[in-house]
Length: 287
Image (cartoon, rainbow, N blue to C red; front, side, top):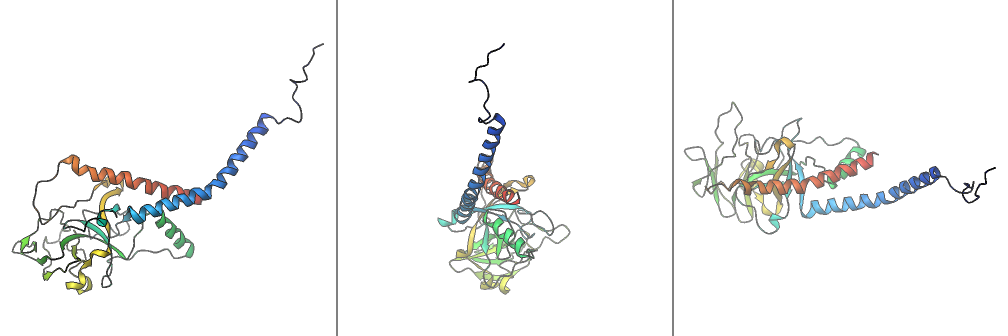
């Protein structure tokens, strides 16, 4: 006969290992659902703050900045990181590619397909808060050609835009294949202080300071309407790279390659957390 130690005999009152594991899982699950609203609020707060004060990813919806920035109908346009900090300390300079709010006289050269039902509109609005880029008919992207105090005109005997009588060096300028590499002429205009004269790189497929508001003073952009400077193409990966800010009014030697790669590296590092954060929150909602 074998003696059995009563202390080693499992009691029916004690929970089994399976029961303990189930209770632990329930507890973890309960904690997750309690923490989820806090995580979502923190994510929204961080994303909103970053977009307001530091930078935001914008989608390029039109071809007016080809080939610097890619945008076309029914295709995957470039997603560009726009720096909102630089112009808090300095003003836009010739050659900068800027995103700005359209002045009252301006009309955008594209029409976005807005969601038709309230649910889709709400999700689109939430997506914009957490960094998911979307086309905005009120925002424009163009290149600064001349600033306050300068006189701009087109064209000289070699079909070049001139500022203060001197021709510009514009390596970024683009003409579609099969079309004449000639720019449309416009009358000389003196830029008032606090205003900008902007053009699209795809020179003959861009409605800009030459034609918006019938041109002239109505086509100029107030410095106060500038949102930020386009720094880096972050999506798609095949087009990763910095956005050139070559000053067309100055012909100088280019910076070393390692210096040119700095904005691209910093931009990608800064933009990806915004995109990943937006996607994670969106996936949480879907679950």
